[in-house]
Length: 164
Image: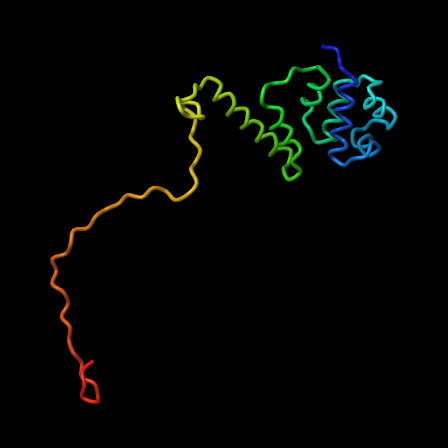
């Protein structure tokens, strides 16, 4: 296991806690740790276990992976941290919905790993092109003039004897 950078980790946890508008006492209760212990972690005085980091991550509604990366336990996977953190932070989703979204996201990333970009395009070959906004293209048809005779006009007589 890699050495944990406790000072950097503590700063990161404090920033996440403040961004979430959660007090130290509230986070300690949610994470199931004591106030003094959490305070020592935030100040870089204590080295938390992976289990404690997982509890803190759950309480902050961020991915445990994000804390492991900050702690130096895991190496950051390129490009996936921000999306995963955003999904985990979304309070409008259930845990099951979050998991499904993460699985779909990872499957798209894996699908695009081997794809090469098409020249002049930002979309890799084999990947779906984004849908364009606006009306769908239409096919234009031309009509040939009708040779039908024009309708006959009939005059009507009004009560005063004139024609209309």
